Image (cartoon, rainbow, N blue to C red; front, side, top):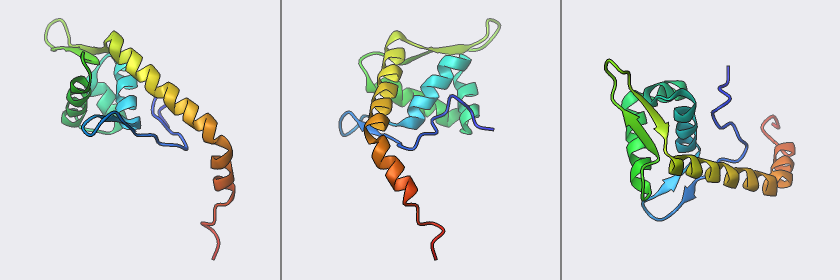
Length: 122
């Protein structure tokens, strides 16, 4: 079963902000799942990645911008959790808007390439 919060798009966009900062569909999906689940570990599990990998990506995302994109609280008696900061929500929304615009702009060419699929030709 496919997770509706994960990107399954015909166009996979990777945006390079500079030589050291980039964002792609995986980081965007992680942000979306953190927002939905309130948990970095739960978001990582839904993506099929380890807790360590999810945390590594969150640390990278937080280091990419002037403010963190994700805030987290340790577990314990009160429970832990994570949430997107206002900047995190904005970054995710803007990345999704760029994806949507690119797909709209390329829809005709994407459809033409899909129609020209030669995978079954011998």
